[in-house]
Length: 71
Image (cartoon, rainbow, N blue to C red; front, side, top):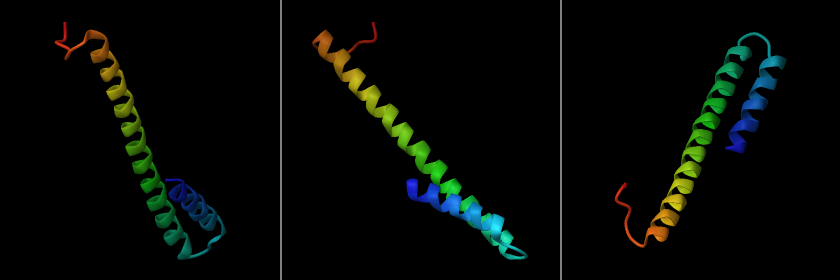
């Protein structure tokens, strides 16, 4: 995830330094890298939230000495 972020920054820097047709390629490359970063960032946070929910659920079931019935 961090690698895609750094590569996206490098692509943006190359976009600023490029001229002519290289600007289009640098824009596409930096866009792809930032998109990959955002996708991986979203997957990471969804996993983090699901892990926290599983821990909370296990603690709640441990307190009631059985499966929760929703009541």
